Amino acid sequence: DGGITQSPKYLFRKEGQNVTLSCEQNLNHDAMYWYRQDPGQGLRLIYYSQIVNDFQKGDIAEGYSVSREKKESFPLTVTSAQKNPTAFYLCASCQSSYNSPLHFGNGTRLTVT
Amino acid sequence: DQQVKQNSPSLSVQEGRISILNCDYTNSMFDYFLWYKKYPAEGPTFLISISSIKDKNEDGRFTVFLNKSAKHLSLHIVPSQPGDSAVYFCAASKTGGSQGNLIFGKGTKLSVKP
Image (cartoon, rainbow over all chains, first blue to last red; front, side):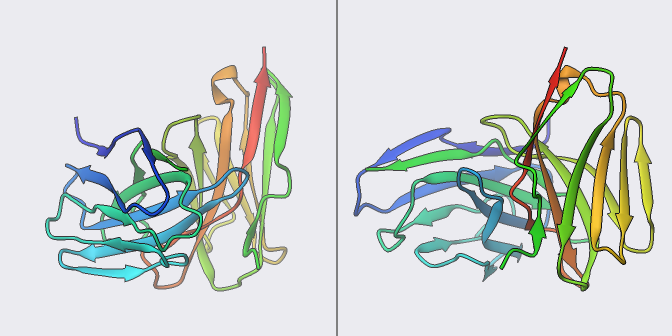
């Protein structure tokens, strides 16, 4: 079954530590995205990548970093510079063709204390 | 400044009746609009979309209406079923943008009561 896998589902870290969230897709999609959801808020774009070895900042990229070394993988690192890291993180992918639907993973809930 | 607004945080509807979820936008450059459905602890799933060249798109029980002059779109679900209970996000994309560069509303939580 094709899809997007995010792991782990729940992640706990102490303040000041970097943490990396995994996102893997086997849909052969070119483009991948990271969104963040906070309670009562819409999804906000952190970073996106439309091709391997290339990525762009979204609306709230500060305190985050990404890499896209393989088409299937787009890990997100939440650094200690991110002031409010506790959130629900969603990875998504789609074909690069215009208006191709986004497919989302089931998310990782990160709690930083 | 919120470019996509869903002004109703929640909506409760009786099973079998119509559910109408509303969405307003401010940016006239948006040319494609989508609705996503999200269950707790899961990622959103794509539901239905509409291009700005149309004013209506229908898929089974789901219909999206677009009123460009009012910068308003709505999602109609008829008849509503308990399994439709979820959070519904409205999203929009700009001309030339890839579909992933979406601007999302804050969502409306729909509860369909048996």
